[in-house]
Amino acid sequence: MSEFQLNIYSAALLTILFSYFLNLYFLKIAKNFTFKNNQEQKRLVNNNVPPIGGLATSISFLIFVRLLGKTDSEFMIIGLFGVMLSVIGILDDFYNLNWKFKLSSQVLFVLLPVVYLDVFINFEALLGVDLGNILNIAVSVTWIVLLINAINFIDNMDGLAVVVTGSICIQFILFTYYLDQNKLTDISIILLFSILGFLILNFPPAKIYLGDSGSMFIGFCLGFLSILFTWNAGGQSMFNYTITPALLFFTIPVLDFFIIFDYRVRNKISPTVGGTDHISHRLLNLGLSETKTLSIFFIYSFICFVLISISALQGSMISFSIYLFILFATFIYVRKLEILN
Image 1 (tube, rainbow, N blue to C red):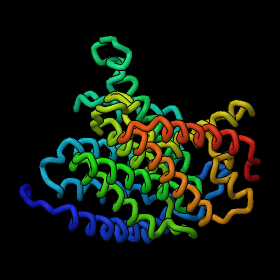
Image 2 (image 1 turned 120 degrees about the vertical axis):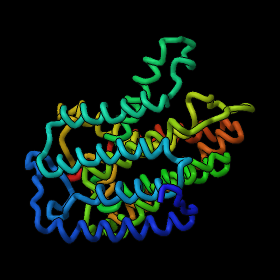
Image 3 (image 1 turned 90 degrees about the horizontal axis):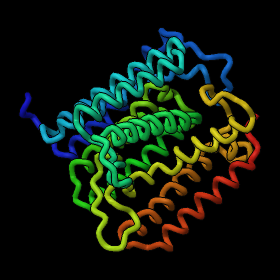
Image 4 (image 1 turned 90 degrees about the vertical axis):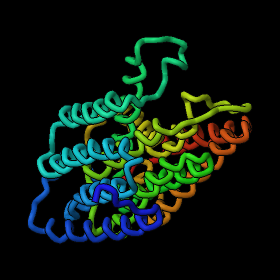
């Protein structure tokens, strides 16, 4: 059994099927449980929909990454820590864990594989200093924890977290395939199809939610994908091997994170509670439907991806300048929109 392997096409097909049916099974048994919703938090989501899709999604990913073969042992370790983090998310969905405990767990489960696998963003090289990887580890852990929470924040509307993270997976697939980083391409495909199996049940009107277990797991995996990505700057690219274009694939979740942070700091609201001040909620408040809102996020994500890719692969400062302009203009525009009450 240890020698059994699937090709990527079979693995992808089986992943989406397994993810769908496992999510369906969990949905059926969820009827026997009660989830504790924090009544102090203001949310758009339907509290009657079970937030347990993340566990089935993470298990599907772990199984089929393993079946891709021994070459993916590094990401098997990452996946195992991701599943452990997913369990913390499940406990939070049941018992509303203290945010300090959740954050500490995130830091721990990110720190361990970063140190054990010796993978990190080489920030010290960017600054021209040698601190024995202490700064590299700190920056890497901070980055991945930021992504975990940013993606957790966008899990605020039917299908949104899946559409955004799915588009990021597609961007990794296209970029790594073009650059012959086949291992990361395969990992991204399995993660994408794990998510797609869940999307079938999460698309509006949602029958099941990711919950903290799913959003944290997906953010965890994507964060590690971003630091495992190898970038050879070359040519006239404005990106170097430390600040890679892959870090910009997360434009939407990071932008949403800072929109929320800005609003809550200005209004003296805790950033640790749920609310209806996200970008998605502000678009809904304009009268857009959930489907149109999802389409806007998907299109926006790929416009940014095209500009980032041209900037990275062609060394185009014009494309990068357009990307920065769009990013800044979006922040200013959304910042002025009324939140959904």
